[in-house]
Figure: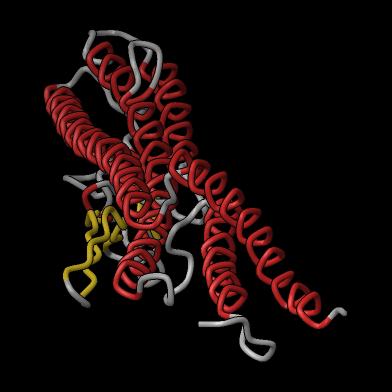
Length: 304
């Protein structure tokens, strides 16, 4: 084709190439600035949809992690109080049992022993009342106000469009030491008294009173077993919460990695591509400049 003043094919080709390079350069620069090769649905609708759903799942898992932390603190508070109520040779039910056995001794001053027993009873009640975290207390309950059970959120999963939330169910009655209806481990009346109301100050060395003491000792021993069982159960719940907490954190990391594999940009590749496109852009500008000079050369044909 001869030289044409109206149609500059070389400039058109150079301009088309330059537009293509500029578009690719804009895409590469966007990937570098966002760190993602799929940042909008227009980049890759399928991958963007999957990544968005997975990010939503991770937000739910983060909420589960927070809930597990709250549950762990609650369980630890109740567990600490239970083990304190069990006590040792200096406190709690263990000390109470020892005092009752001591009270079996003939001629001993049971009034003084009762003074120690009363202090232990008050101390155990105080510990149960103090076992409150975030307004929750499983050891000292109010009938009609305290829920009969608590669901501790422990997991989240989604299959298709159906979410499933797992939980650890804790039955309050299993840990109640005192209740307003006196149905707790330490305030349930057995025989003539509950562990909370045992009083030996008026007992003597008579056979009947010795039998009463035997009953109190058996009652306290049974309470120790019940409280120990409750503490052991909470210990198992603590371990389960701890295990679930680690699992959820690991699962969140796994989801993050999965999302990254779908949408994250390969910065090494993008860096190489950027340099190549910048070079192509410079060459395209130069080629367009040369092509535009062709029109100027036509003038030389008409100079006399």
